[in-house]
Image (tube, each protein chain N blue to C red):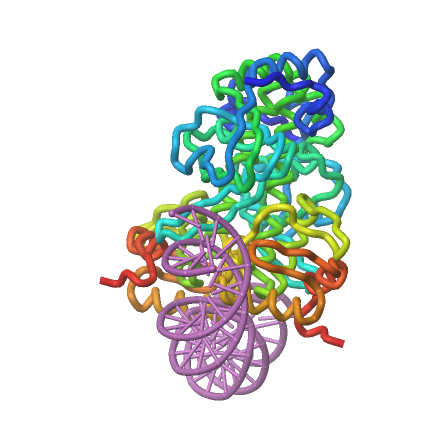
Length: 235
Length: 235
DNA sequence: GCGGAAGTTTGCGCTGGCGCAATGTCGCTG
DNA sequence: CAGCGACATTGCGCCAGCGCAAACTTCCGC
């Protein structure tokens, strides 16, 4: 409902190679809403009705298995689009989107996607790039899950989060939203227990500093080395 | 270099909502090549130079980890495009593509992608759908790897292969290309040994019939049930 | 500031699946 | 058709990580 200045978003990947006029036209079709922490934006299986752009905050996308286990598919960072199932030919959302923080998102009705793409072909190309890089990331995760142990997967997960949502502090780089051990477990396919043990060990070694739902990486490079370490290669 | 009749490909997802003239124009830019079994089409890390459409045969896309382990990212089925990294903004191929059978592929130089998309915007939209469904599949695999045991993952892998490349026989549905235990292991993040044991058990139960590099599903439904079974739910 | 809920840690027993070695089997090539 | 190389199977020992129970800590609302 509040107006969004095109200068705030024109630099985003979605708007690449679109001029200001085009950006403004596209933005006019959206309205922005505030989403309080823990609010569900859309649910897995729900009919697709809107697509979104995250302006501020953090969104978590999760999938629920038939067995009732939850898996975190990804965290959406500021500036990213999400809920774009219809562009990929889906009629229902493949995952549930929940605000991790109080967030602000732009909302478009899916009905205008076709028209937008027709009017601004660059939109499709830009979206393709976004989806492509997510495909990349997903494949990387598949490879990780296939070949690495829990400790390495946790290291990768934290590094990924820090890269997209890290905040520099005196002690190191902090993940700037609440992240529980359970969340990390759901990102890495491990149990809370194993994650907790892993983090404890790292904390003792001084690699990280953590408290309830909060994690600071003190030595990201060491963690990076650990993440890429080859098991039988301890010199 | 042989000419390709547009009637052969016009029905493919890539060409959806494009008229015959457009199809023909796009096809004129491609040339077709025969790829013998086991030939590598492009290698992970190689500079992107072409994108492809598989007309006949089967292609395997693999990623190699720093530790030297191979993971099968996906099998490309007839009619699918592959090697479309540049559309997603990549400059090097993210995986290696190898012919599993003698295959026939259409090849386009990447340089014309931009022009093609500009001339035929539906191409971008169609590609977006394709990439989107692959993202879906990749996420499904991540969820599987996070929550399921090897037996279930193997079941899923076989069912997926049979769906895209199954051939009905007297005994059941056969996967119509050579597939080793090692291959299945690389698709599921298991070892050859565990895969072998799993298949042996299934064979004893009459669920499948297998020999060297060949697998026939005799009771796909039972396998499906097994794949989706909830562990603590054995009634 | 008290009580409870939510999140975290830790110990302990157990097991799915890995690692390796040895053996068996198929299929091709000379 | 012999022999070799690739693929598959099987047995056995072992361990990373799960499952569960219990205790502890932090946070928050009343």
